[in-house]
Image 1 (cartoon, rainbow, N blue to C red):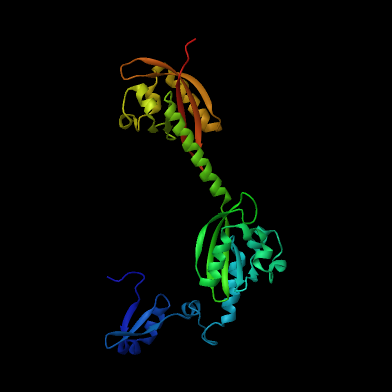
Image 2: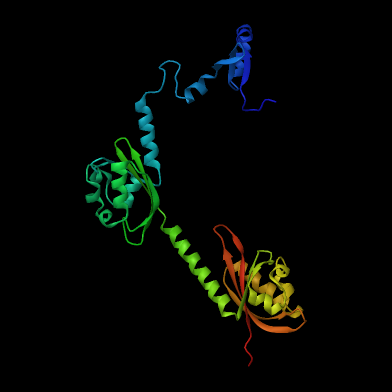
Amino acid sequence: MATAHEPQRVSAAEFIRGFANWRLQSARKPVVVTHHGKDAHVLISLDDYRRLGGDSQTGPAPAGNLQDSLASIVDCLRDGAIVIDREWRILSVNPAASDMAERPAASLIGDHLASALPQLAESLLFQRIIRLIDHRERFSGDVPGILRPRQWLHIDLVPLPVGGAILLRDVSDAMESFASADMRQALATAVDIDGAIGHARLSVRETIEAANDTLTGMVGVDAVAIRRVRFSALLALGRRAAFAEAIEGVFRSGQPVRVASQIVTREGEALDVVLSIAEIRGAYASEGAIVLVTRARAD
């Protein structure tokens, strides 16, 4: 069965007899003309032909127009792009790279790359550029401190006939996010090793998505049994309203809260605890909350 993207096929004899009809059909999708059962020609609309790079009067688009278009695209990129020749002279610099280097493009073009960016001489990237120029070797990786201290750039080295291209993308925010995630993971590990603090991750509907061994030990159940249970179901009946009000306030204001409560064990014992609740805020919306559970100190 033909799909919407499959061209229509017609024999050469039928095409000649019904040219007017097939000409109209080709305005909607290509018409393949067959000869002795084999595809021989394709009839397409003039607009499709021009999109493929042809022109009914002047033929294929001049190479200069294509080069101008590519240059315009490079200038619009948010990533920096520097092209160098085999002598390391800078041939072109797009606006993003000029901004990263904090120098006008005109002052960079024609300069030796190592002179324009002296930080390169002491970086790991220097040897990679040598291999790019001498051996046309590609490279892709994250490198710190090329343009300024504590800045991370994702670098792509691409061989070109004239020499090579250096593509630069600032990934400092992403690296900082990774570092923060590592720190949070280390903190969670330290909390678990301490053994006195229970914690649970809650969805925006207050259901438990994950809980550590300390919390499950307090309640007296395993991690599988507690998963998908509403956190308030672990609390004494008289404390549930206060918890619901507290977590609603966290989601509404984004501010963490601390509230006294009681957790009921599997045996029915009510343990005095303190709940510390903080929102997990995603890029666009709330993703739930973290609840820390500590035993209340006896007076």
